Amino acid sequence: MSKFFFTSVAVIAACFVFIASSANAATLQISPSTGTQQIGSVFTVTLTLDTEGAGTDGVDVHYLRYDPVFLEVQGTAITPGILFPTTNTNVVNAQTGTIDFSQVSSGGSQFTGQGALATIQFKALKAGTANLTFDFTQNTTTDTNVSSFGSDVLTAVTNAQFTIESESPPQPGGGGGGGGGGGGGNPPLAPSISNIIVKDVDPVSVKLTWDTDSATTAEVLYGLTQDVTNSVKIDSPKTSHEIIVQNLLSNTLYYFKIKAKNSNNIETISDIKNFTTTSVNVTPSPQPPFAPRLINTALAQATDISFIKSSEGDDATVKISFKKPSDSAIKKVNLWRRFEKKCDRGDLVKTIILGTAQLYEYVDTVSDNKSVYYVISSVTQKDEESSRVLQWSGMENKISGYITRFASMDADCDGISDDRERLYGTDPNNPDTDKDGHLDGVEAEIGYHPKEGGGKKLRDQALAERLKGRVLLAPNFHGEAYYLHPDILQAHYLGRPQNAFDIMRAFGLGIKNADLDKIPESVSKNTGDIKLQKRLAGKILLQVEKNGEAWYVHPVDLKRYYMGRPADALKLMRTLSIGISNDNLIKLDLRL
Image (cartoon, rainbow, N blue to C red; front, side, top):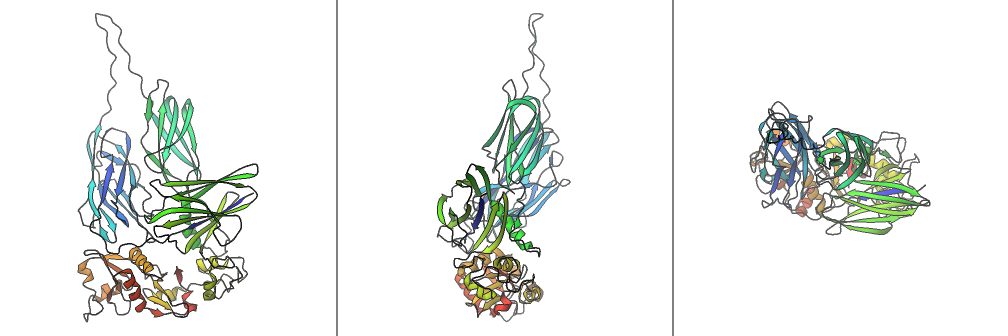
């Protein structure tokens, strides 16, 4: 039986402009914005975001208002889109007729372009005019806004208005003239579609069932956007229908609609609906006995890649599918393949230039008795790749994996480079130094000591609390510098100006001028607001009411230091650093 292994290489974003540009303009619109609905009908609207070329960090819809006399939201929440990975707020208040929704980016990524932020299903309750209205004031972050580097770039919204009508009474048949002509009958009725149910089959398949009031053929149209283009058909007329939609991506939002056509050739099309496929049951490999929580958390992102294996004779067919990366700096994706378990990527078999499509696929046919390793590598405009990979393997239709560091010089393929083996004190020629059955790189990644074995924990929470917010310099290991985030207690590597900029963008906290003025600058002798200074100690602040300037609040003197350009920021942070030993450095949650 073939064994298939996948490695996804994340990417460093190309050089970004640090200062937010006031020329960027984003819009939010409700689509459709007009229409006529009958009482009792259920219809779907989409909140569409267009960033107009701006890189955006998140969106707040605070609030979208509707009149609960005329409309009812189906469910207690709306359906999030996939533009941003994290949904912070999703609340429907049926009494006040308000929807509160927000999504944000993570890890420094941004969304640029146009897409569905969320979809909402409404039921029409009463005849009249129903309005959908955003609370929106330009350049105000307390209502509906789109964030870019801490500034609101939302310049316009499009609201919606719908007319709700009572059901039209049936039209009487036409009478004949001249005292006795025969009346005409009612025209043939369109079929009705009801009882639509979605059931999960597995992470890449769902079963759709529904009923029609007369025998009809059927077609299901589905896709990643509301412009559904994929199709599955039922050609034999019936009243109870069932279709299994296969070859989907796991943990992914899909849209669909159903077409029904009766014997009179009259067709009905349902409203756009949606479903989300389930997650792949990921089991870390190898599986440490000490609850590798961090592995499971990190592997949630692995759902961007899926595969389908089928065998005929001596050959196996593998289909690799992945979503378009949200980072606009990525220009292409390379697919590499090898037939031996080595640390290199193997041979380049496919280069995919990214366009407007949201889903990309590659189909490969290989011998069924070989092990095959794939690497999916994203490439930026500057041909940059990051030093981090997600490596996973598939055997017997079971996906397993582990997080590790990418290492071009890793003699034992344990996920720790030969150079960094010295930091941990592990053997660069032995992938399992402590002989506990777990790769050194896996143990180090999830916070266990790769050298001492026995499930000994490596992380020191008390040490992290004592050093939080500081910049740490390792003089005995190449002078590497790390910023220890004061809230999440992760030590982020500061090797290049780009690293410093990524940290500003990912962790910068917006602050108004009035509050910023309460924190004295580094050269000032003022005391400031001590309570506010202590609360923001060790954090990076973005001056949102000016040009997005970044400031670092030193945890010791509680003053703010101007970070300037990425190169200046790196120099400043290293200047304000304190030394840390190798033994203490590896006790922190290091993020390269």
